[in-house]
Length: 132
Image 1 (cartoon, one colour):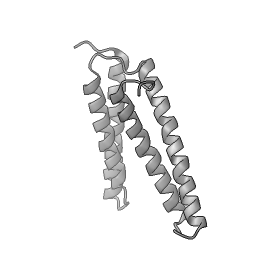
Image 2: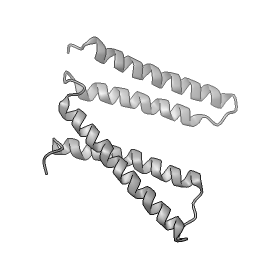
Image 3: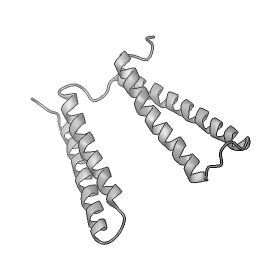
């Protein structure tokens, strides 16, 4: 299998990032800090680098279709996050809930990230944004 230098350099950069995060997280944990989440992020970076390298094969990493899908997915995700923010605001205003600022922001960030991933998966399976 023939690979171009750009693909290999991205793979190696992902592997290096993952290894550095794992090492930093474990070192900080051994020094008494609560930093295992950094090592977990390193494991996630390693998994993402390996899966992307394995899945792509000789295909290009992106084209016009994937750019369009990602742009629409992020727009849909932004819209879902705005709706969630409005729902949280209305629920707080009516006295239904009383979350702290960090709880409300965490909910919006999780929904934003999760919905972006979900929209990318759904639109990739459809094949294009324009199709119903």
